[in-house]
Amino acid sequence: MKKYRNKILIGIFFLIFGIILFSFSAVDAMEGYDIYNNRVRVEGTVLDVNYKTNTTIITYEANGVTVQKELNMIDTSMNKEDKVVVFYHKNDANQFFLKNQLIYVGCYFGLGVLLMLISVLFVFMVIFGVLGDIKLIKHGKKIEATIESITINRTITRCPYKLVLSFKEGKNVHEFKYNSVWFNIKDVVDTYKIKTVPVYVTEDYKKYYIDLSVLETLNN
Image (cartoon, rainbow, N blue to C red; front, side):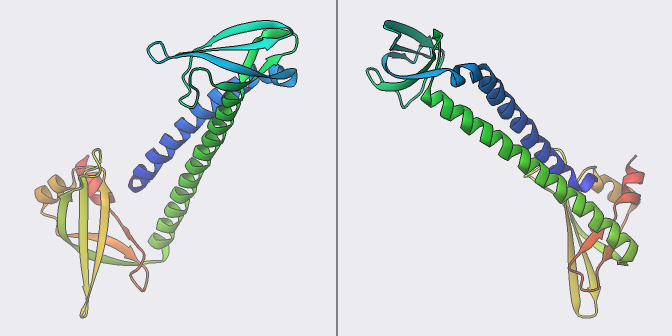
C-alpha cells in the first residue's frame, strides 16, 4: 500500500474538497428550498457594488413595496444599475435569492459531486494496483535486479527518493523504476552495501513489482 500513498493522498484531497463544496451547496439549497417553492420572480436593480466591503446592494418591488437588500457577496457580472432576476418568498418579501446565486449553488453542487467521484476513481486505481501486485507476487517470476541509481525526486516532498533498477537477460536490459520510496532507501543501501533488489515480473517484463520489504525492515 505504501507505493500508492501519492494516489491515496490525492484521492483524499479530492474527497475533502468535494465534501466541502457539496456540503456548502447542500446547506444553501436547503436554506433556500422554501423560498424556491414559494418564489415570485421580479426584476431587480443593482444600486451599488462595493469591492472594499465585498457587498452588493440591490432593490426590487414586492407586493407594492420597494425592498432594498445588502448581499455579502460580489458577482463580477453585476455592475451598478444592472438589472437582475430576483426570486422572493410570496409571504415574506425579505426572503429572497438571485438567479445568479441559484446558478452558483448548482455549479458548486455539481463540482462537489465530480470531485467525490474522482476520489472514488483513485480508490479503484489503488485497489486494482494492489490486486495486480498480489497477483505478480504469487504468479510472477522473481528476479534480482541491480540497483542503478537512487536520486531525489523533486516533484515529491514527503517521499523524495527515486529508485532505478536494471536486469540483464541475454542481450536485453530491462529497467524498473520506483518513483516514490517512502523511507531513506539510500542510507539503507549504503549502510548494508545492498546491490540488488527482488522484483516480480511477468514473462514479457512489462509489468513488475519491486519488493522493498527487506529494505524497509532494515530501515526500522
